[in-house]
Length: 90
Length: 419
Ligand SMILES: [Zn+2]
Image (tube, rainbow over all chains, first blue to last red):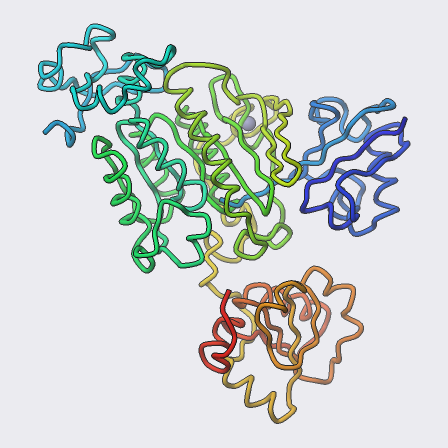
């Protein structure tokens, strides 16, 4: 079972899907895989050096990946990665 | 009448600060003061009004007196501020402060239920004050009709127990967060975009802050505002009501706060879920405490203008609708419409090249460099960014249509609807 990457509506339109599946072994590999398939989405998920942005938080299941090694965080089959970008509307 | 009395006894709740004791109030009502003598008492009128709270375990007379003693500051009287002001005043929060310097616009009414049709054109502060007085005349309203800045934030915040962030831009969100951390005030956070929202409670003593979640903001233009991207009218109702609930829980000391969790609200998926938030030891605000005073948040967020105010124009070459129309009729210019496809169905310019702003970089090669190009959108914000983008790509003959289709409708083509 692959890992599922959940996208907020603001990013989902760039992949035409609210959730994508990937077989990466780390969060970084999942993001890299998705970035190859959807380049416009890739630009919104990681910077030019392949690093996460400070304004886009990734959750591996319910945990912020910054406290689990960042993009190096290991994912297991069936894990869910959720992308939560900063929004400011009020 | 006791309703206009603003002084109160020193309070027991952890987020209710002490103030001078009001002997007159205490004497006026002896019936309920034995619950917690240092809290303000409730008049017979108030006891009747708050009956459904008073019979509720976990609120009761003492809880209602904590609410009366509480001083809550709302940053913004817009989409989130509307349900906040209505529910917190109805609930009997004793003092509600509001910071806003905007005027009620007819396009606000789709979601900003604090304001009504007859308020269009008046200040949001005046409209809010009038509405709160109607909802609950026992509430003391303190208004600050000015932009929140690094110069005034600490001075305004210090007289309140809880700050509720209902603003609409990143610079103010970082400003509110840092001021809350510096003063040790809870920051009840809510944010919305299109169909989705976020809520949390930041800056509690051992909890994370907004900078722990997002150490730095996105560059300007990467995340559109509600004015540009749209917002489901009921969404701020949902998120603002969650903020009001968290505020009341903090005052009462009841339940499990959202501190340490980020609630994600997805209206289309009908999903509410929360993820864990951790305090970041390296956070410059609440971790290392490197931030000892408020900074320049416009600069921090790289904003070319103040607080998302669409009236402030970018520094790009502009052309007025009348000039553009005259040149267009003579075939001297091409209009490039950078609005989204669904907007083109609402109101139209004459013959245009339509390229949504987000796709402009992919289509630059198709645009002529030897023609005068007038970039156009709804109000002139996105098209100004488009002009900057084309200038950066080496275009020299690019102009921004001042005021967008709104001004075009005013000055050139009144047959089209504004939106
Ligand atoms: Zn922090």
